[in-house]
Length: 398
Image (cartoon, rainbow, N blue to C red; front, side, top):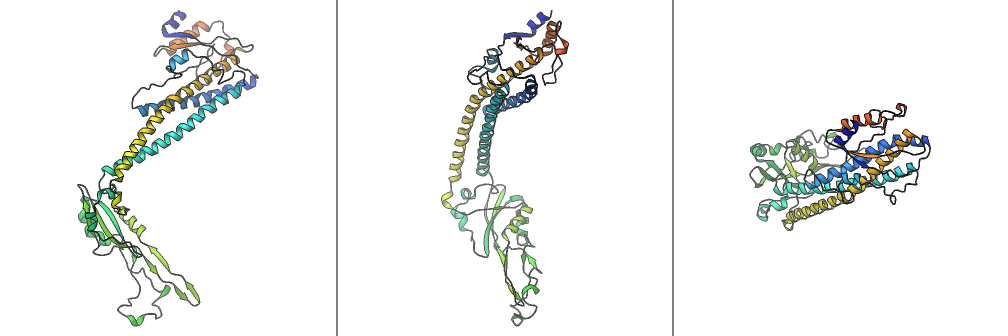
């Protein structure tokens, strides 16, 4: 009955395990512990390549192969690669060789994947700017010479014209309150020498004795606000602000304190962000018009090229990683079998292809067929937290 169940639940294939170097019992036991972890690491890399290929193709399945054949067929027809993995090398060295090759593949995938992700992000950003409103669009593509002719642009030692994009819904509020935007930034305190020139230079009218910030206000130059352009949901304004202010140095006795300059631009930008206004960093250059579209097209070409290249890479290296994974599985079979049955090496390995949802039925049938006559004291756990059996059982889900 057990044999009948085996026939119903699975197909059996011959599975050749090469003659590998055994080494000492202690080294085998240590290697057995390490192999479980190595198996998981190599599998995770195989899955990562597979997942990347699926994401790139946009389909649920992939056409990834191992040596030109589907992974299940490769497993059924498995033959040890003696040229790549010499069987007479010590087992530990062999495992390090296999794992090292797969980890190199993983590092390369990380680098390629990051480069592709960065390029995709640049493309999405370019698309957002191309199709966005005045708050995100490339202003050199949006503004014409006629638009800029309306604006008096200042960029001097003390004045700077900045572009501010706002949602159209807050336009009345913005225009009414612009002169008070950043009202604590600029200092307008100090002696009024224009109305009282006789006080110039007198005690208490200069240096550290003067609080130049006793009166504060916005750095916005009154009357400088100018509407530059509007679209369906945003407005773009030009406004001139004070770049900063200089506080002169002074003597206190024989000690001179140097003057200092306070920058207003960054503080003004923070005040705009607080109100959710967008300060657009912008230098008008008519020759730049249309270049954003060309750059977008070039980015699309580069992303398509990187996608094709990464897809080819996945197809090539999936097979290489899968072959390595299969060889790790074979080494696990060899190691566990020697630990279970002892020396000299004498065991038979077979491969079962299990029908869907029949895993437990197969295991139960094997327990019935092979359990009798087996030595219960020889049971081992293969690090997969599986039950003990009178045989070595390793599950493999390609």
